[in-house]
Image 1 (tube, rainbow, N blue to C red):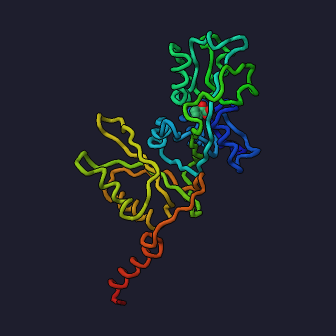
Image 2 (cartoon, rainbow, N blue to C red):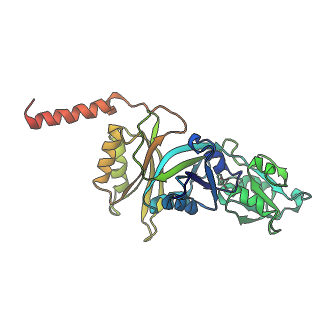
Image 3 (tube, rainbow, N blue to C red):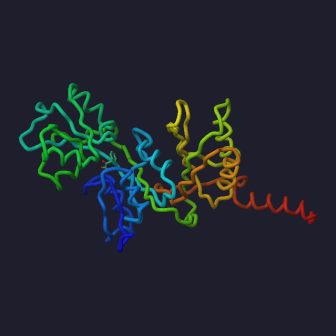
Length: 310
Ligand SMILES: O=C(O)C(=O)Cc1ccccc1
């Protein structure tokens, strides 16, 4: 383990991931490791090179970041300890002297590319695409070789590199946001704050009618709202999927704990990724029927019946 606590993030400096890490007060003044991909970031956490890694997990335009969801499903011993939102917009940059008419090939991170395709299709209908490891790596590549003529990058990129902006605000959705999570090694869950989220990944026991409904019912009957439900192929055979789920609430909320117990009773694999404070600070309100007291009273009632107290 490294001497000073370090934090890993998708680099180089200037990425949206770095902007997310800047929102973490505990990371201020610590060593920050720029890495090339999610796997490397999580490997730093597993090996203890870093205490935590910031990784993109979902964006408001494209949905879940599949590389992140798959890595969290496959690497044991990790916990999400926080989430952070970054508003993302993009510029098209090029080497000085390039004009928009010169652009034949665009270097871009696949997620950024997917979020700018309306603009690209309209303005550069015949362009080619070279994928990059990050938004800043895309821009930096322009100064390394001439395989691409332009790159999609965060607006602040010209502070880091001698490039010119050919077009600004090229994102398809001006309000696009990306959700990042801070991931550490498995730790005890933090206290609940009243504004929490719980992330899990679960598999179904077999391929029979109503299996997914069985899973969803665990949450519905306990008043637990889902804010994300996505399927990802397990990868071992065609047609086998796991479900990536975000729940409103904390594992220390009785209704969430009870729903997880219900799920665990029939799912062959429930991965608990963590309960952590929400980025949107939304207070989770539940009707009295799903409050902690009602679950506790019901358990006491059952104990009373068994012990003969009432
Ligand atoms: O953090 C970055 O800048 C990245 O390259 C990943 C990314 C890509 C697109 C939107 C948000 C994050």
